[in-house]
Length: 455
Image 1 (tube, one colour):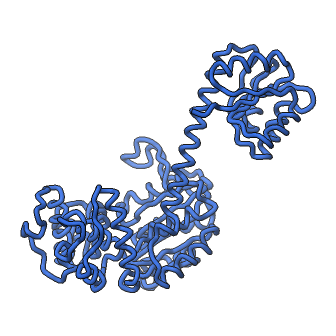
Image 2 (image 1 turned 90 degrees about the vertical axis):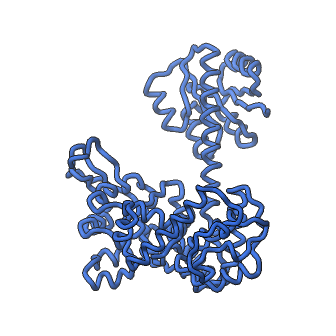
Image 3 (image 1 turned 60 degrees about the horizontal axis):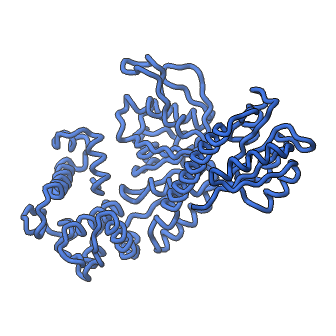
């Protein structure tokens, strides 16, 4: 394991010598200097993991040195030491970027314990940075797969509008990847270090939506047993994605408009305004201009949201992307399920290209995952594709599953078919479909999204 490097800055030679002996005995690589100016010059040419610095020194003092480290963006973790310390000095040191503060005289184990805590914090910081970078890569343009002219134009538009705080309205059919585009906008924007909060306005009962968005105070209504932060507060200095914005109630629309105009919210049950800095990205499958004409959506809110509209093309209008998407999902589910699928047969790929994909990319992904799980060989044959893709009526014959006997996988297939049947029977009315399926409306919406069903 690589030894951690520590720089000791103290005008007393005896202190530097004592600390160097302690740290070297514990496996650190220690180096000492007696002046702040000397230390500043050294950290510009060498990298250190930790810096132990005295506060009171001739010439450049510890607090002044801290400020210089901050301005030069020195990444080492700094711990301050002083025999003249008080609470005010400690607070000031923290403000200027110090990790901790030790009062002299101190025992050797105090220094070592502080260093160990600093090491743990540094490891956590690096891990968080690594995970954040992975998330950013996850939602980079590379994960929105497509090479058709329409997708290339979409990528170009996303690049242009990501850096602005202006509201974006994403318009597209179910399954076209509206949330993925919203995440891409967020993680390619200056707000990428802030939170991304997503809320589905159509999946939350109207009576609870305002509480979810704006929060509530304790006692604001019967079940409000404690105060709750809403989505706007949680998305402060980040992005709030409002999916299915067309399902929002009139009263919630009024409050949303006020937030967009004034940058303030009020929790339910409170008169105290809270300032929020949030970028709004909304999405809808509806024609909001028609909803405005019909009086179901506020015209002033529509214009506020529709500053930068993004139209996502349905899969049937960019079928040249299907082979690329197939390869992408094969790679994804080979890794996720431990499969070794090599590809789709010519007949299976032809069926995928012929189908209209009303559920768009989500439906395609679901069909590919299902076929890969059910297939017996390394190449997926057409017989393992869903009945809709094949143009044949649904069947529950076990030979459709080959030698597959998994109850779990069979239940997924049966559940999907029952949902499709219920939506067909109710002409796409999800509320009625949930009743005849005997499940809640939010549960049905969740399963429709999971299976990539358009209905």
